[in-house]
Length: 604
Ligand code: ADP
Ligand code: MG
Image 1 (cartoon, rainbow, N blue to C red):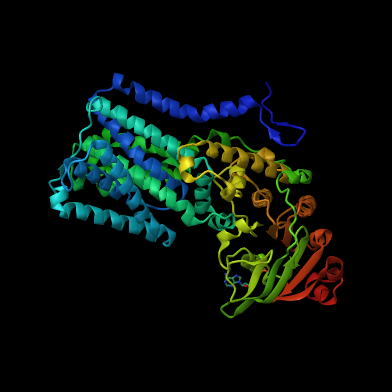
Image 2: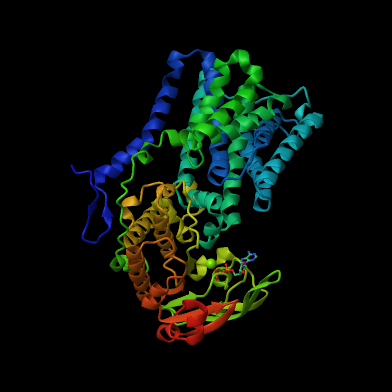
């Protein structure tokens, strides 16, 4: 059987069925191997191993959720031991009947899940306002508060003496029985976190982490995507806390050390950001390590620190990078970007609207600099409109006003008769406005295909809960997004690089990836900021044909560009900016010979 990719008559990439299947198996194989090891452990290990295995499983239940927050969304929640503490005390106190009459064990776990979720959100919310370091400190502060309350609230928690943890009924009341139970919970946690990670939600989190501005331009609002994972991470930590209490048999505040928080966090870092298998292996490693280094137990924090340092210096991508064999293969240098504009109809296919995108009297000053000084601009649907002018004349600023990054001091932006809310970049995707950036904003650690799929995040139908539980709409979303992204990549000529990690691509290729990502919205208007910069003459020609065809498909294009040849070859109308004002506006043929424009900008 041939393993080469075949190109069908439609031009879309059709992988041989077997290839996709074997890839799926190779992804699942490591999990199957871990499950096999876990399953034979009772036959080869003693009960001491049961305790260690149980501990690893419980830690992973917490880390699996935290991984989405830290590893995927890049939010430095380091005080997560607090949620483990809350879960442990909630189950123990409820089953012991210290506050209200004793409740059955399953109900106590339900309460721990809810309390974990609520406080997961409370701990997480500052992330929406605070930057990395400050957010990290706020989570640590919360951890200290929880421990202090556990110590002080003696009537309920037993203070420093502690409280008896709930016991599990048979057959889970033996070390190996409880081990089996925790394994099942850990397997479910893995499955759920994978469902989220490999969905529009997981990709959106990574976009928030690595390309926040691009995420916003694609309609990804931080609140909308972070809140559900804070709830999930907290809920999973709450459950882990309940299991942890039972494993300890007795719950005291000093079981929840700062070291434990560090362990969770480092497990994710040495595992590799944006991976599930890596942090899983990291958690197992960090749980077992102290057992082998028992004489060094007092040094455990120090050992973690050294391990972290070694990983960060030697393999910045963590374990996940070490085992990413697919991206080891060298790429061929003789790559050509060969767009196929004829295939754009599969991606855009929109009825051109009749209303322009209009800016009226837009004024935006940065301190004393008037970057835009009363700008009027009309971009017609289905046309290519050039925006040119010397460096610093306000071109990028104009795009930033249209796409909502800057709220101008005066003036308005309207589309189809409706005035757009100023200063809300995440609202633009729903209006059908897409853009690329002067410096490509790409998620380097995600594949090219995933980067493109991010473009249509907001068009997904499955809710977070449906995604978590892998209900049918999740699979539908994935199929639709993947098919569209493949079509977009084929149209821009990059389909052969779909599975490659984006940070391995050349600059010129990234420009086309950004265009493909922007096309995923089937945009009414596409804003391109110097797309030809850094491209070869041939590539600029092909880019020109691609842009022309994009406009023929009904998308209005606002093209900011320095290459005058490209501008005059493909634009119907051109606006020339100078010092934030319109110097000239008109049909391309007029602008080309416009006296002032020629002397001020185009040159003789
Ligand atoms: P162009 O894209 O046409 O080269 P810009 O729109 O990037 O120009 O910049 C227009 C003017 O506004 C320049 O003088 C620039 O220094 C200034 N400017 C742009 N963005 C900012 C900012 N965030 N803060 C301060 N000044 C800015
Ligand atoms: Mg610029």
